[in-house]
Amino acid sequence: MLVLSRKQDEKIIIGDSITLMVVSIQGDKVRLGIEAPKHVSIHREEVYQAIQRERQTPPTAQPMQ
Image 1 (cartoon, rainbow, N blue to C red):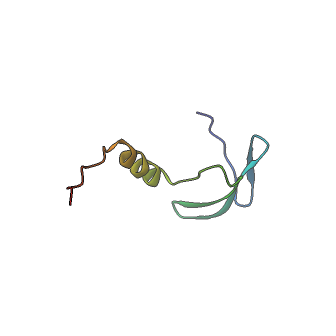
Image 2 (cartoon, rainbow, N blue to C red; image 1 turned 120 degrees about the vertical axis):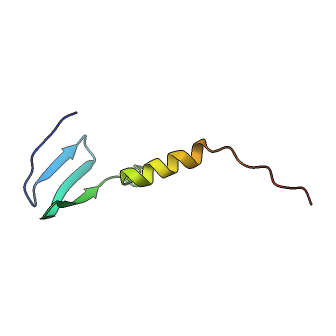
Image 3 (cartoon, helix red, strand yellow; image 1 turned 30 degrees about the vertical axis):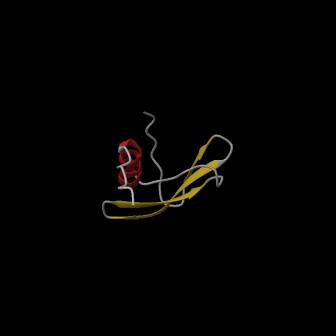
């Protein structure tokens, strides 16, 4: 894992099309601004994990009417 230090308003560039910016730092929370192409999915880790769990859950059979 690459670990970088940034101050408020400083940026990190990933490839040619993704930019991360430290928008603010308040106590133990950091707000990040992310610029990326629309086709790139961006999720917080807990949201990503929930999506992955949903994908792994087999669909339940629906009763026939």
